[in-house]
Amino acid sequence: KTNFIMRLVCSKPFVTTALLLSTSSSIFLPTTLAAARSTTVRATSAFTSSSRFVPSKRSVTPSRSVTSSSVFFLRTKNTFSRKHNYYRQTQQFKMSSTTTATTEKVGNRVACLQFPVTSSKSTNIETATRKITDAASKGASLIVLPEIWNSPYATAAFPEYAEVLPEIGATIEDGSSVEYGPSSKFLMSQAAKHSLWIVGGSIPEICGDKIYNTCLCIDPTGKIVGKHRKVHLFDIDVPGGICFKESDTLSAGDTFTAFDAGEDFGMIGVGICYDIRFPEYALVLCKKHKCNILIYPGAFNMTTGPAHWELLQRGRAVDNQCYVLTASPARSDPPSPEEGKYPHYTAWGHSTVVSPWGEVVATCEEGESLVVADLDVSKVKEMRMGIPTGMQKRGDMYTLSEV
Image (cartoon, rainbow, N blue to C red; front, side):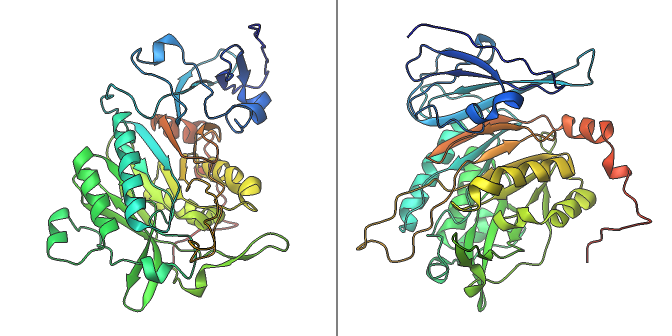
């Protein structure tokens, strides 16, 4: 257990530094994300859930204890380099999900919640309560829940777990006179309780004779400011992989969803899972609504997750020169045959935050986690000015229009 330092030098203009400490607390490894992503931020499987990411003394409050809970926090700092326009350095560390001191709210801090989903709606709400409280205690101002967090992810389950959901403009007070489901009431009350922006993952919604996969966006007063019904339904059949058809029970939405989250975040666009595969949807959101952030609650699987989950997030971030946030359910073991009423869906996990440069600045593995990052939306404008692809499109050759 001899301490040693390994230094990797990357000549590329954008270098991301991650500080890692092994489980034995005896190996300190500064490395570069650009040169060694497979062993650092993207894939931390070499480090168990009890490993610790050690911050610099300048970026952490001294009273926090470190436990085996998975909480990833990255603070991004941008400075100028003589040779290049930008130089990016990130510091990553792992903090306890139960800290004795409550952090004051940080206006630009986001948290992506990753937690296991069960067949019990009440248990799922209890778990979400704990994770939201945890995120609030870490100073988050905006939180994102996973796709279908209140229900098993199974087409046969959606009708049973579906709820009547409020429309845009609805408030907590409206819930006393309208029969909204428990999941939406819970999200609205949590937003007001903690004074948070909440992008509420997604919930099966029943409306007339149709069922939708729906995300509610809620402001810090508990008011509904956005409602997204999944536009592109997850109907795939990968030979030797997975076959899943949401259209067996779900209907597709038909609207673009964006809302204004104030000075710290600006405009935020929302899609759900499979929507991320369609760059046109994201391009319209950023062209029409000038979104600084795109958020996709998602539940990629063990076939598409390893291959495309991160790739698509980085692609949408680079396409639109904006932040991309995702929140997935945690991976869970299949229930026993006695408990398993519905087919088990194994989620890939790996909730993530990607920068406008396409860098993964915060992520986690497959288990229950809290991914926390501070965003600097001024970098979105900086990026769009530095590489002005939005102003260089060839309208004489092709066009993108919202139907």
